[in-house]
Length: 310
Image (cartoon, rainbow, N blue to C red):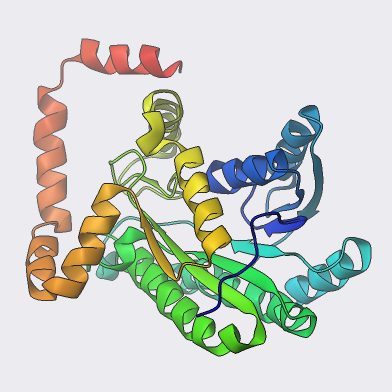
């Protein structure tokens, strides 16, 4: 396998760059001197990332993008190529998760998640891989997850989508290697270690709570992860792994110890991994959460909120 020359990228395009890992990666590449194309479905958060980069004298441009829309990708590719050139690195980061078992979610729930998490990655590669191949160089980084190795009954749609992203990346890597284009799959662990925070961001949907509780839970968990997670829960920790993997054109890269553990168990003892995953059923988690919540003194909850700054 060839070694990509991505130590000094001039142009980097990142999806889902309005927050979390996407934003951290955008800031890191901008700090390296690259022009960053910041894309997100939320124009306000994407612009906030651009403003942060420019405040540090970096270079960035913002485009609103729904990654599930293939025609929007084709239009973006044409505009970026015309206005900026072909990206040296494409990072397909946009994605989200929903908690709950298979029987709890509708076909629409599955279709929507797969349209973003899987089709969004495929659409991005379809839009920019031909341009990279024509030039003869480039690096594609697709964000999978450590959860793509483990068959969890509590998040089947998310696990399925991330496993598919990893396999697609490996297939595409084999196809494009001879054409000078590298492909990397990054498999972050559970940032924050809660299952409600994934890939550096609080998951988009949390079942079993009313809207007020959902918002409060996101605020508390998100702030705690951002302020007190140290390097193992910081999106920038994952961003550093992305930069390193892209520089060396590594194939599949787990990031965080538990992701490496799931990677190893998936290869060495998949049966044991399945047995362990079977313990995490929705019912057991709900019962455990109820027991724990009943035993947590309110002053502890108040303290956590105060430490999180919410």
